[in-house]
Image (tube, rainbow, N blue to C red):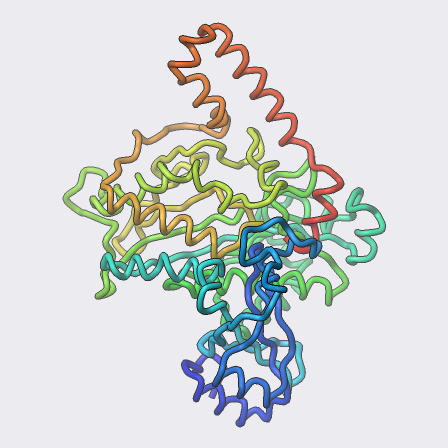
Length: 446
């Protein structure tokens, strides 16, 4: 039996027996998408499969540097940080390529009971269940950008994450010569995720020094988020094992473009038939797709912290670095936040270009799926599509202030326009600069 064939606790027991496993790794996502867990013995695994895994919910209150963040009851220590039950997920079993045969199995887990309401994977599954209740299956594909450095974790830390040596000094977008030079890394990367059962569709040089992008294959439901979390975790681990360093920070330098985590999303009905295309519609969008798009556009400004969850995330939302900064949409328009991709029924979809590579995949996918389902439920209509380059749209806060009739009535139109313009300037200046504190907190782990 292979890890990818495991579907139940009995399958997991059989695999462990066949492999002669002594230890396995069990892990779960924190609020940031970091996998936290431990090695457990074979005997402990058998107990966990039967009874669950005691895990402190404290992991959901930890910041990147393990500072306990301010949090409401349940994560504030009022219960003495007692363990709560997590359920093991045998169907997520995979193989870690470089571990010894007796210790190369990994299994994910998620909080159960009351803490399921705060568990990132549980939040996504809640949205997937809502989709099923409405008659839909969600399909997602994630694109993840990262930058590679000729540094170790120790050398980067010693330099304060400044003046680092990139793996390439040149911008080499999809230049095969560069791919050939780095074939060792690419081969190790692709072999790693082939072994782990994480399907990689494309991998290539992006538009920046040391800048790379990988597109993961579309998956049904939570498998897409599982794959993205595993990809980020083990790409960082692989690079360090090879004496290098990669970062998924939304923006790691004042001089670099932002690093995105674009998400492609579509729906099928429960029979597996695509529901986003209507041949009789002038723009080929079905009512379902149009309302889904309307929900995403309407709720994205309110749900933005699920797509850009860190202080550094907002340094990517500035004009001029290939990141959309307003809830716009367009047909095949990569400068919009929401790109409608028309094609055959099975490939027609929406790409959300707002998430950064630092986003927690479970929460980013839950956000977009939930917003789209809200749009279907309430039959929300999107705005008119945008044409041309709309990267430099003003930030939503300035737009809302400018559009406020009470503000104009109270303070005068001239003041409103002037004040909004000066605030826009300050925000652009703040977001454009990456601070030392951000680098220390997010560079290695985001």
